[in-house]
Length: 254
Ligand SMILES: Cc1cc2nc3c(=O)[nH]c(=O)nc-3n(C[C@H](O)[C@H](O)[C@H](O)COP(=O)(O)O)c2cc1C
Image (tube, protein in one colour):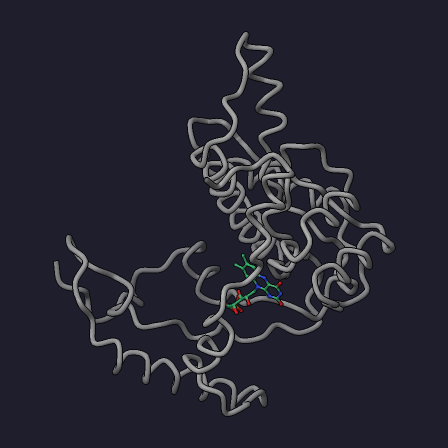
């Protein structure tokens, strides 16, 4: 099937929410009520989950001191301090192990599949929470910086073996809502029926230009094209100790 020229005539509340969303890193000082956090996480848990394992947990952090520790561990990300809440989205095979024992078995450890399942479950529930929060007027940002020092984060949050923070999610009332960032063209991302070669030189040049144009309108132009920024940041492996550290926390990626 050919890609339609425009899909703008197909809209819904969810599609609109997704298309206008953007990471928020500036918040008012107004706290987010606990019942709102509960409503968001309660909705998010209806996300699909592998074999209904629900291999994730949330740790909701409102305490200023704990947020400060997490902000530091994430590389000094000040917006974590400013957010009313930082939700640690955890891959959790600890509870699963207990449930399986209650069911009369024991969780098979030491395999990649279980670790992947827990991370995928965490990702799906995290994005669902983000969308639910957005729909209530809240804003926030995912925090991969939680994987800078997973052991430090585990200590700060009292995580048992079998739990690690896959990523964080700040939540608060936006002081400013940035415009939604352009994305790579559908043509480069969507393959119909079979994966095929795409004109990546042209598509990447176009995307570099789209992003730069938006940065100019928001006063954030830095003259560094997207592809160049990725080349600078990702030509060397990152967080090389992660495999060993996650193994210490009970997750194998062998
Ligand atoms: C798993 C994940 C981890 C992220 N980690 C961070 C982070 O540590 N700090 C940060 O400021 N933004 C972080 N982000 C936000 C991304 O930079 C952002 O989503 C991306 O630039 C696209 O912009 P947008 O969300 O406004 O569309 C993260 C996003 C994801 C999905």
